[in-house]
Image (tube, rainbow, N blue to C red):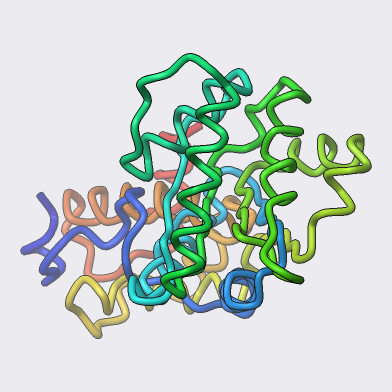
Length: 264
């Protein structure tokens, strides 16, 4: 609705994770740590952060850098399952047969897939999204037990746990799982400087080099969003709509405050 008014080619502040990651220092470090864990078979890597902190965007960038000639990557999005259903879900992601109710047979089938990948020179990576929703310790134990399958001194699978802060407490309470985590990182909110850079980055990606937001407006957005990208997006999107309705030439603090009042 406001695209033509601001000279934009697409909405800049959509909350759907994009393929273009804003490379703040913390997002860049998160990406590097995940890549390192996968490339060097570090067992379990864990990435945590608040809702809207940018975990999914980091993972999208991470997956793009995993060559299918070197990695067999699958992601499990709904992990709140019983142990046997977890095994079925993983097999399903790898397009393996599910024609048995025997946990032993299903596990053997999964292990065979891991071995075949290793023989082909492929590194198997399983990402578990929203891992904080797993409530059964038996399910987490089942994930950990996948690391018992090794070839020489290397794991045959790398697990990547993605979740909100409660995952940190869950892992802390399960010592065997905690000891298996080779790489971990918690995404912090953006600081004020990177919030300003983030807004400019999103506007450029949407097709404009124009400074639509004043510096004071961007700082007001930072204070009210706490540097969380999801919240920044919500405020900025509404600011662009209000600004176009008001026929403003620039988004100032007054418009930002009006948007914030609507969102509350």
